[in-house]
Amino acid sequence: MNIKEYIESGILEEYCLGLLNPEEQASVLDICSRFPEIKKELAIIENVIENMAVNVALDPDERLKQRILDSLGFEEHPVPFDLDNLPLTDVSSNYKNWLKTLEHLIPEEPKEDFFCHVLRQDEHFAQMLIIAKSDVPEETHDNLVESFFILKGKCSCTVGDRTVMLGPGDFLEIPLNLEHDVKMLTSHVVAILQYQFV
Image 1 (cartoon, rainbow, N blue to C red):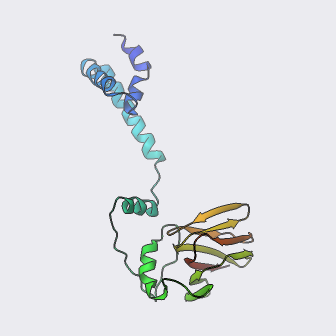
Image 2 (cartoon, rainbow, N blue to C red):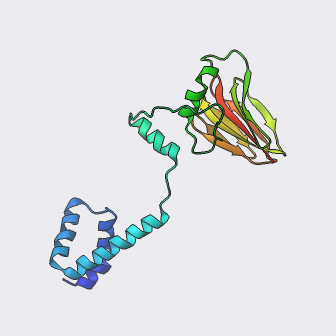
């Protein structure tokens, strides 16, 4: 066997990437057991690929992790927040904890077209529970950064020239001076509306 040719053939890389069928994998392992130079080269390739994977790996979004667990049937028990010390919402917020905290304020079928309950307000932030049945017309803000965190229902939000679909657990922050609107895709939407004053 020409060891140099075998190493340069790419089969060891294919083995490491899981691209070989079971018979080809067994053949690579057999050859590695008979040729120490090939076994050594395989170890080097495995280390390089592992290092590459570690260097480009991203931490998974907590919401993605929870959605996967939910789809597999692992129920997470929501933990309510302290109403006097509510956290700010962001992309990693857990909507189930918010629903548990605010369940006493959320009707099954809202009667009003728009309901707003202020949860928190100071010189830097305002946070409101909103329940909307009708679309929000186009608007722009030059003195606050607005964000939505959806708890129930679905809507679409057009921000500038892009449209984003939002559902439970989705968070969207809208930059300053950018036109945006919200269209209801379900009978109503329950959300945390958050303002950061600038």
